[in-house]
Length: 384
Image (tube, rainbow, N blue to C red; front, side, top):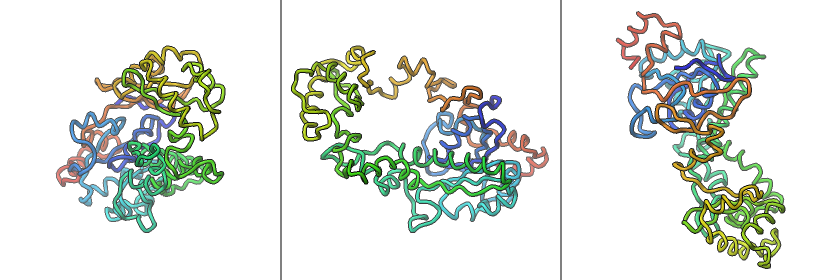
């Protein structure tokens, strides 16, 4: 494990291992320099991805301690770790951590300064709080899923970016960091209730504002940002690939019209919604006349706001992303680099993803457990 770097160096966080938004939140905190210890189950759960644990990139940046949390000595071990931690994050359903003996009351009794971050889909309370669910369910409830898609088609699933990661991980990280700042002054920790329904709804603030102004409609594919506008859309090119265009502003739109050779095509006004179908038809016809890369080359320096739609294999090789080192290679695996960037205390990937329990003895030793204590924990089955 490399020496921690970044603005969170010196912060110690315990992650009760799970899948989805909590691991990504832990990754972000670790990339910013926090020492995050992942508590893995002694036996694998039924979620996540199959295959080599070293390729589970969401687990990068932190060491793994495998514990059987049904064993009282394992619970005692976590509570001892909590004494020296700044924060703990967990993603169980409401009540599960309490049943394990690792809820906020027990943890903050061990460390009153502890920030206890909770990540759920529905939240800690409410009629659905204890129901199972996944990203798609949370964004369905908040209007996000209904709003994504083209005219005449069904809602389109935006991967798991809007619920798990956008509305989940990022809000958990923001909440934990805010609570850590407050604890520096008050000396007291608190519980952060991060729910994906809350976070995904928050991400829709702009759209709900537009709806209130009458500028947005529930009809998919009829709005400025949902493929309704021809100048904010995706078009197929001659080689079967695609170009994304975001020529929202008038000057960029005019540049796009010139680029496409449509100055004399008698197009309707850019903001005349009744004319959007005709503009879209003309744009589509023009884009089909050249390949994707030909359009990119032709548009360079002309302020048109277009970009090639790249595949996951293509993106890391793009000159701009290579110049900024947006993707890095660790142990032969291409992956996104830490973000955001800091001018004075840059973050770093501290280590590749760990196998469950790979660092159990080392973690316990680093956090003050003696050799005989570690041996006793192993003999009891608390440490896997």
